[in-house]
Image (tube, rainbow, N blue to C red; front, side, top):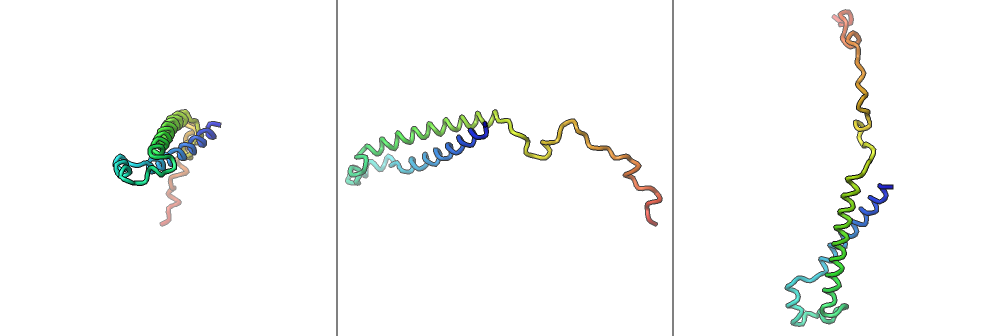
Amino acid sequence: MGSFWFNLILVVHVIVGLSVIVFVLLQHGKGADVGASFGGGASGSLFGASGSANFLSRTTSILATLFFMTSLTLTYLASHRTAAPTSVLGTMSEQSAPVAVPAAASAPQSGDIPK
């Protein structure tokens, strides 16, 4: 069940992160306000002259808060995750020792060496 929540929050985290990038890129810089006051056409926008800035700023701050919350949640879930070992060495028990090969069977006998 923990893997389900981890994957769900990870998907939400990626979507929120991409949304933060989009909303930051949609905002105007500080220098754009001066150009808009001289007929830049911002007053004819969908949200009004300053409505888009307020909407984008609030949405960005909400998304940033969600991003940090999902980051902390993923950190907590990852640190308390108990997963099965994924490597072959991790599946071996620590008490199993390699099988000892008798010395007589491994060393060549003098009659076995060709001349």
